[in-house]
Length: 472
Image (cartoon, rainbow, N blue to C red; front, side, top):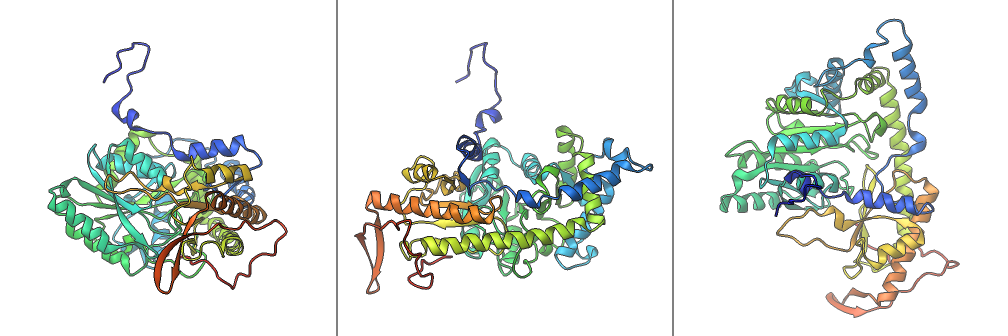
C-alpha cells in the first residue's frame, strides 16, 4: 500500500527492496565492544598496507615537472587506456598464456570503483525484477544483498570441497527449463578462488564443465557467468587453476572480475573486469550514469605500482603474511576444537584467501540472535553467522550451525586468542544445552545426550594427534 503521508519520501521499489547489510551490524558490534577480537570483518592486514610505497608513487606522480597534473584531471569512463592494456596482459599472465590467446583487447577491460561496483553494474544491465540469478550455496552475502535490491529470484547450487557441483547446476537448469522459466535465467555468480565465505576453490576439472553447461542452456539468450576472482592472487600453495574465462575462447559467456582491494590496498578502491564483447559497452554506458569514470588519481597509482614492480612485490609479501595467519588459525582450531564432537565439527583448509568456514553439530545455533553468538561476544570474540551467507532461495532452508572466520586483519596473537575465546563459548553453550551429539557406533548412527566438558583455563591442551575432528 502506498504511503500517502506528505511528510514521507516516496521511495522507489528498488529502495524498498534494499535491506541493511549484515556486515553493518557486525561492525557496529565491534565498535560498541572495543575489546572484542573480530574474526568477522574481511578487512586486510593493516601493518602490510603499502603506505611508504604509495607515498613514493604519489611523489613521483605529482612532483615531476612533466605531466604532474594529469592524475588530478578527469579520466575516461572506461578507465585509463595504458592501465587497461597492462591489466589485459596481467590477466593473460595469470592464466599462463599470451594476450592474443584469450581473444580479447583492452577495449574489453573496464576499470571500476572496486569490484563491487562492477558486480552491481553487470547485474543492473542484465537483471529485471523476477529474473533468476544462480549462485552457490553458500555464497558472498554482500552480492546477495544487491540481488535483493534488483528484485532477482535467487536459486542456489550445492557445493562440495571442489566448489560448485556441475551435476547440481545441470539439474537445476533442467528443472527451470521444464518449468518454462529458462528465459528468466540471466546470471551464474561464482566466487571461484578461495571463496568468500568458505575458502573453497573451484577445481580445475570442474571449470570447463560448468562453462559447457551454461553454453548448452543459453538457448534464449546468453547466460553470463560472473567470475568473481577477488582472492585469486592471494594463493599460498601451488598454482591456482586457470580462470573460467580461460576456457571461454570466444569471449562470450564469462565476465572475469578482479580487484586491487585485497592484493594491494582497499583504500585505492580500484577494481576491473574483462567482459564479453557487447557487454563492456553496456556497462560503460551505465557507468557514465554512475560517475563518468573511477578516480583518475587511484588509477595512476595502480598503473605506476604495476609498471615499477611495486604491486608484484607487495602481493608476494601478502602471500607470506597471510599464509602464516591462516596456519595460526588452523593450528588453534586443531588445538581447541580438535576433540569437540568428532565427525560433526569440521572446518575448511583453504589454500589462499582470508576465510575459514566452521561447521558445528546441527544442534548448536550460530545465528546473530543465538545464545552462542551472545556468549562469544561476552567472551570478546566476533564471527560472521553462517546464516548470513545463504541467499534467500525460496526452495531451501539455510542451516544454522555454521560460521565464517576471517584471519585477514587480526595479528597472529589475536587470532590464537580469538579461537580460544570462541572455543570456550562453543563448549559452554554445548554444556548449557546438554547438546545432543550424533555418535557413530558399530557402523550405525544413533543420537545420544552427551554433556560436553568445558576445558579449564589451566588444563593441558588436547593432543592434536588424538581423536581429532574431521574437516573438509
